Length: 94
Image 1 (cartoon, rainbow, N blue to C red):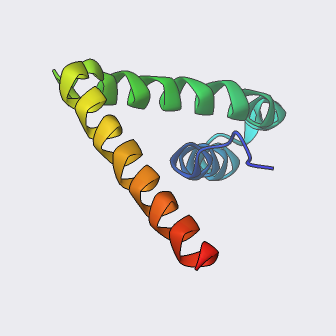
Image 2 (spheres, rainbow, N blue to C red):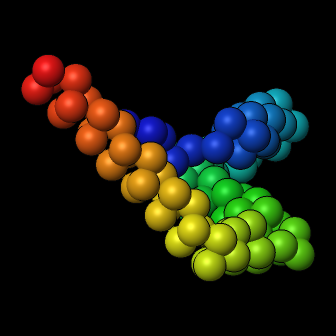
Image 3 (cartoon, helix red, strand yellow):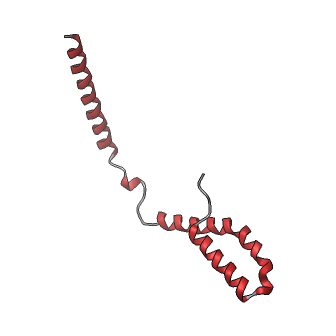
């Protein structure tokens, strides 16, 4: 099972925890909050990364071939396979 925690977020939260521990000893009560915040912050970082990937300007449909060309390629593959099957049945009957 893949964990929902992003490595960069965990490193950032760890750095914050260390900074709080050494530089703000009176705020050590906030350390458990960092554990609770780890998953939601990680999910937000991942969602922002996914949105940046999706806005590259290309559409998923732009990568697909022309539908007519796809049909022609599939028809050619079917014809090739039928010819192989026909040749194979002739060889087995002899």
